[in-house]
Image (cartoon, rainbow, N blue to C red; front, side, top):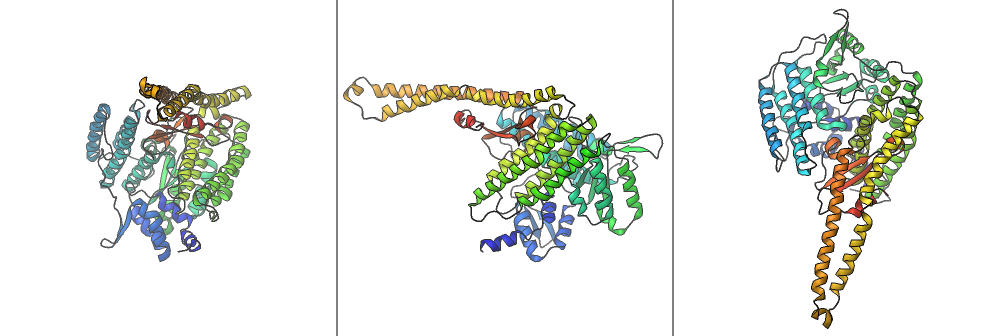
Length: 574
């Protein structure tokens, strides 16, 4: 097959189809088979073949001729809490027993409210476990966390009924079951990679309730919209640090106001399939419930809203299409990908980051700053989702450059939360400069921890090279007589030992420093992205003015002291 034919076949998958299928998670989703069957029904045979090869096979989803439906067939059996964990420290083993008890209790529980409390308690317990900067412990904790989520989702999927708390939204068993698995648990599993719908996607939906009413509500009130396999959820945004908008207890909560007819909600749902029936009652109830959702628009000027909309429009009209344009066929593939990413980053800095910083400094009150924080967080959710779809293209799959770039995007989103006090609070010019200095200082100190030991490390390196060269020389009579080679060998071993000690000391300092500055350093493996390479730890530091005008600086650090390369570490800051 020639390149042109391959390119045409690649383009058979429309972006909406690619995006919807990329969202499917068969370990968690309740109605994913029905959702996938509906997508396939609208595809041609050629499109189905491309979707199967490019999108379903990597997810280990296959068509089963016997049952006449899609099935999930993982290469390795899964479902146990200890799957993929090589060794487990004593305190994690104790947590494992606690989680096993939680799963047993979860199977017995029939009250949705208590299920919500139990699941949030268990997940918070795992996240609170200390790993003492030990990579093996950190990986074991991560794996235990994801294993528990998948095991809990399996228990929820198998339930056939439970007690529904009294509610004004007519929330039934399938709605709550879907929210638990496809919103609450999936968001906890994916973190910043969790997908929400933006205005562009709502505009493409067929029903006016979604493409007109809900689209306008989201535009003005910044609602979080989540498309699950059967339902669409509208959820209230949050700005409070540590409060997850997708928490289960929060979704179930209803607050009465002055009468039974007046109440406040944190979210609601609509069955998208029922909208086709034209039931006015369903539409009316959904509109009333959306109106009751608590939002944070407050006293936000039209100018601020328009400026944020301009940023989102630039992403939709320029950056999004740029990613999916054909790569330059006159360049080696990795070079073509690198060139595309460089262009993408440059345009993003000029047309998203720089204007956003200016808007933040223009904000007249705290309501506007809250609006900007939520708006940028949601915009970056869209940016990350589109980039993840870009990574599923045949030419880009497995690209190390694309994976590193994704880390920068995710780190930027993480800093929007971590550095809220330094960015999204009312500040005069002096306070703003102090916040900028804090961001710069951490990066400078992190670099200096390595740079201050570099001269001595290099001196020892030169000494080791000189000694090794002497050993390789043909020994003279006097060299043999005075055993100079043996002495040089001892000297070389001693010099290398000093180099290892110097590097080990720096390595320990770097690990401690990263963990002592959680507000200014993103630990990508632990906080944002699953571990992609054993033996290497990835961090990100804020860059640009107050961490807003550039993507964060990616910094790699070998897990092993023995393999730590001090020269390479310092070069990353160049």
